[in-house]
Length: 457
Image (tube, one colour):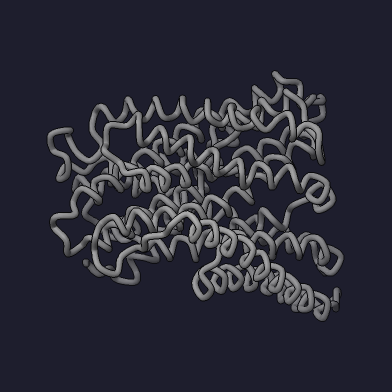
């Protein structure tokens, strides 16, 4: 495996954040309706295609190539804790408590139903010969929704807090449950390779047990780290000392990353759920302990901006590399051939249909408990199921794990082929939902009468 020099690896993230500054300026001044993360994904795609086809041979291309082969665990450990803690820390805790069972209903039974329905598409509709375990892995990846683009829009237009809670709360916990489902079915898919020591044959009972352990164990870890963080914040209470205010901020990001690491890497639980619970616990009981809320808020906005910019660009880079490969499936013009684009469009349509089916399938119950809901909100929630950060990270994980496991197995090329095609589909869906759903979400919100823009706003 080719080694990349450290300076090359430092170049890429800061280069794309510099590009992100220009993109942000152009979007906010001239192309207001375009989603920032979608544009960064496209820029990454162009970079990936250029590197794969040999059109770039400078130091930047070396840096891009290094990130195109980034280790999947690194993606999880570097990007997800920062993004997820910020989402959890911004939650309105009162609304979260009131709407808890609605959120849980959509985040666990809803995710399982969505995973299964999407798996049926992969297994019966696609002609790729995927096994049921790969199809379920694929379904779990696409079950993770990303509220980033829509959340920014909701804040901008002054959407009602209940709607924001529905979207943000569901997204945080369905990310956690989809990661647990992914871990289970990806392990089964790796076992199918027949390579000794790769994967594990998990039966139904073990799967249920693993899910319960992964979710409940992670929640306990998150609670413990949240309580630890509260102790730190309580003791750093000298509001007039700027150094203590800064240390409070440092403590939040340290606990966010440590809770994820301990849960995911040391104990084998869900790091996503652990960091979300850490954030919610801190928000619930520690909001009044923050010496400088403005400093804390500004720091986490910066973290989210930097991480989202790099992650979506990396996702675009890897997707660009995948769709431009010509050394596999040459009879179809590469790993992502002409007919695959047609299946991608079909998948986009079916995923939107599945999303509407799930939201309105649970609507009779969701509309009567907790925060309640109405048809207009359910319509918008159905349409706003964008795929983004967590789905991209899981798709990169799937492909890199398969390539690593089969590196010395020339007869296992079919598994590499299938994983690359799955990633191609996931990347395409992320792009389409960001560009189409993300762009049209604003007009739909106004059309449904969920916001009333005043002259001042």
